[in-house]
Length: 108
Length: 126
Image (cartoon, rainbow over all chains, first blue to last red; front, side):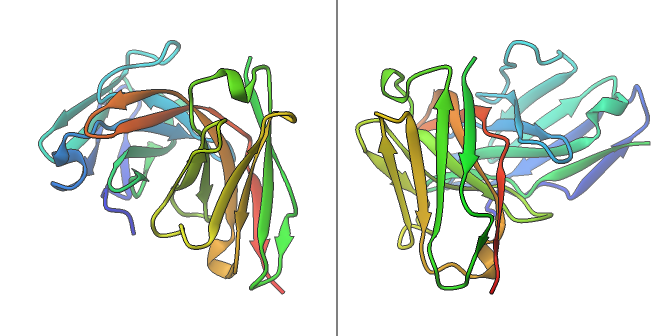
């Protein structure tokens, strides 16, 4: 079980905004470690979506945004599209790099 | 374009040692200032960081796996390898090799992984 907790699933209709939380503690996110986010489409390797809490790699649509506050972080997807249906993982550090429990995003 | 490819047996018996190799193409392991990593994902479950290695041989391991993990590098072949000993069914997973695109700097540098292999499924079963 990961020290970074995410909701198992979130869903939204096309065009809507959804957010995914990543809840940590004082030994990881709250200790000052950044949070990165990955998107994993079925049967594929994870893809970097956000790094350093809120930075998007080139090629990632600006519909994806990240933030961090205290012991938690969030990933927001605005203008939800069918292609956004995937699993999403946060990553931080707690004695070693650690990933969140993962969230499945369903587009209704 | 940097590419990573995992290879190794897809089936390992319980109590034996799992061995995988990651072959890097499109770039040299020894010319980059990154720690090359191994990450795994049990079927239907989340990601777990296993460890990483620098081209000089310096390593970092997940504390929960440290007693069973060895990561090594062969710069002449542009490869790095993973060995996991005394495996059980709980070690059944897709194993990925990966390279960071960079690091964010907090109390400890935290890699963010930008380059991934396609992954290879290793099943532990008799």
